[in-house]
Image 1 (cartoon, helix red, strand yellow):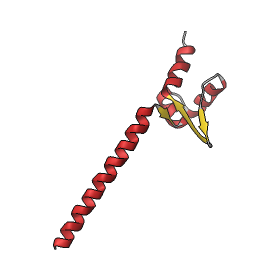
Image 2 (cartoon, helix red, strand yellow):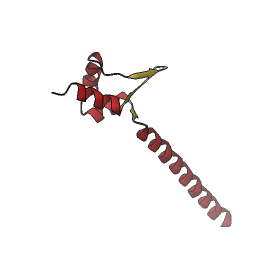
Image 3 (cartoon, rainbow, N blue to C red):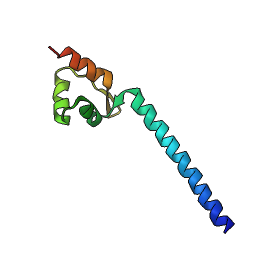
Image 4 (tube, rainbow, N blue to C red):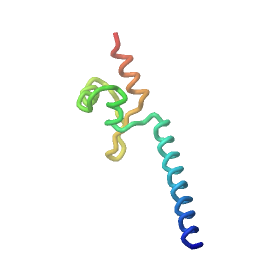
Length: 84
């Protein structure tokens, strides 16, 4: 019985540690301001295809080793530049 309780306590501790690490990693990524293109489209309130059209109009996307990211600041700058 004691072993079973200890195992359950250990599982709970591991679960809490994993959840805390995932939360910290997610928080760090989200606060960094860098988004995937899908997330960027959602942030901009447009479809993914529309976001790709915006690239042809000057929206800058960072690509490193095939991974594409876009900053919130760049989306905001682009919209500000194209506002009238």
